Image 1: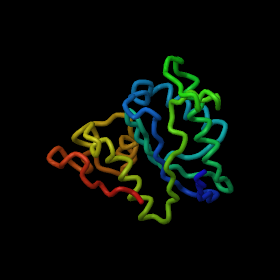
Image 2: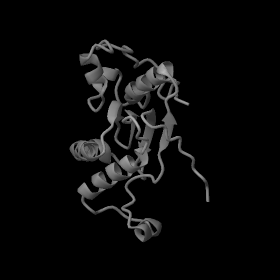
Image 3: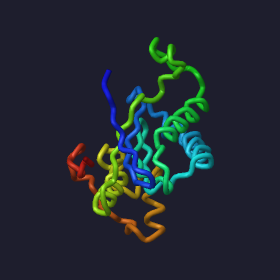
Amino acid sequence: MTSYRRNFVPGGSFFFTVNLADRRQSLLTTNIELLRAAFREIRRRHPFTIDAIVILPEHLHTVWTMPDGDADFATRWRQIKSAFSRSLETNEPVSASCAARGERGIWQRRYWEHTIRDGEDYARHIDYVHINPVKHGLVKRVRDWGHSSFHRHVALGIYPADWAGDLSKLERGADFGEPS
């Protein structure tokens, strides 16, 4: 079995990518209020700061900062995924391996996690979160995607409303500074 190592830094900031098991689905945007409720519920029980987030139809990217002395993002993700899954109707096919574990099979079991190293790395990942709907060809301008913390960042004066401009002339899938 593959051994996964996580870098648990108490009070640290982390970038995550979390995917649905079936990337052809659009459960996250179709059920955005249920996903938001799952995040709210878990943040009440296990606080953390969402520095940036974008919800796409089949995956999401986010940057979190953990409370001082706390590095347990794994529990938070497990509970967010579980709360969201429990809120959905049970009409999806479930593989034998998921059924044996009592899982619905909505989410990919693993997720991508990157420990933020410094201020430059933090800013680069925040930008990546916000540019992602453009990268995937969902909109031509960052401001046109509603399921994003970009709008909060504009209200706080962090970004101008026209940040990144109109990117419609760029090739879909172009290099948007993929995080490492």
